[in-house]
Length: 113
Image (cartoon, rainbow, N blue to C red; front, side, top):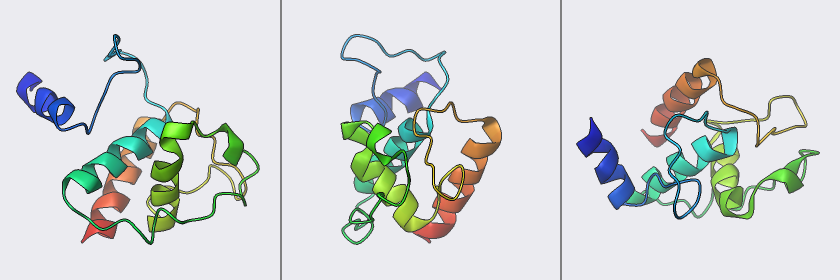
C-alpha cells in the first residue's frame, strides 16, 4: 500500500499539505479531493481544456477556493463529478465525508469513460 501512495506522490497526484508536512491522518477537504482527481486526469493524459474554463462565480463562496484548487474545482464542477453542497455553495474547505468521496470517485470514473 505504501508503494502505491509513494507512486502517486512521485507523479504529483497527491502531495503534502505543505512542503514539509504530509498529514496522512487528517480529513480531506472537498477542494483537496478535486485537486487529486484533477492531477490524476492530467497524469492519465485526459484533455481538460473545456472543463477548466467552467465558471464558478454562480457559487456564492467561489472566492473561498484556494488558488491551487481553482482549476481543479472548475474541472470537478465542469465534468459534473462534484457540484455544490447546495445550489449556490461549493463549500471547498468542508471536510469530505466517506459518502462524498465515494460519490466523487464513482462520478469521476463515469465522466472519464
